[in-house]
Image 1 (tube, helix red, strand yellow):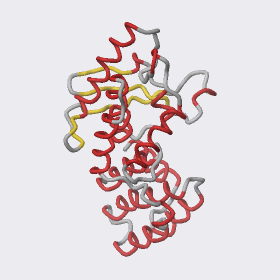
Image 2: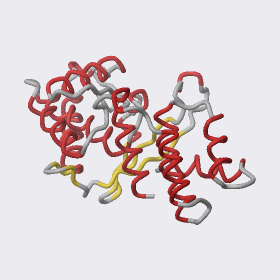
Image 3: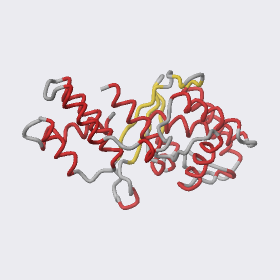
Image 4: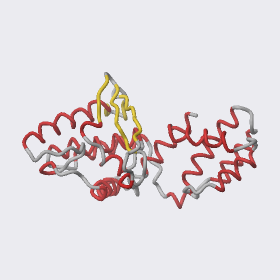
Length: 239
């Protein structure tokens, strides 16, 4: 949601007129992934259409111009039912209790906030706070956060009373959080929120492998980035 609003502000600042051709030229010149352009064409296109800057016909043309071939995206478009199945499988596909609780929490945060994998594994325990039914996470904004001497932080809010199918977000997160704290009390201390055996922090590669493996078990060709498409698509559909 914040990403789409930010892009909308950029467009309003840089464009002198908001007709279809001007927006098409503006979006075409941006150095963005095709999938991101498709999302912006849908989300911002709706804004232009609802505010009568462009016609319904112009909006349909925008979607067609920036749409991606289905075969190129494979089945990386996740549905809510598939997210629910991934959460369930993530909890079952492990013998160690820590992993049984941690992996569903990983899927839940990915599917609700659309964070990058580097941002997720970079979370420390004190980056997460609870305010009633809201959990706040201090997320580093930059893709390459290691180059920033002063990290740029973005506060994400996660409603704990929402559900993904039969799974309650709050229950999934807090079960892992409570066990993590007790586990760290018996193992080597770690400041990271996502930990593995002996309290060792997870790596980008380990999370990427986990997501690919769970996806294959359900017949899905997905990556950690697939969840960003899922969240962005949901946001665009609500605009």
